[in-house]
Image 1 (cartoon, rainbow, N blue to C red):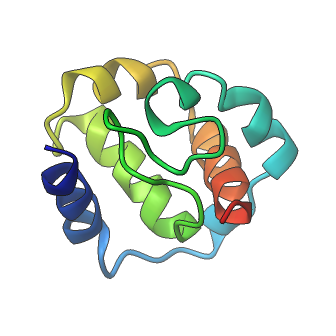
Image 2: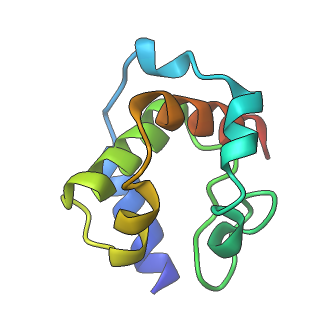
Length: 101
């Protein structure tokens, strides 16, 4: 399941780029990332529940969140997690996870 989810994440966001999306605040993203750690681990390195998100390209990360929010990517848990987020949260989380390796 994790391999399939990661493959979908990568395939669903290849080719997406946007300079405005790369301007997130990593410190603000770290403050928001508490709930992400439940599935993706405290450093975003992945667990048996969620794939690695540390080091992902910001544009790809943001597109994945948007796809979960819109339902384009079908994952009920992620849809609930991204539901209350706004565009700035997407950029901030992307900036934070891009700093992790």
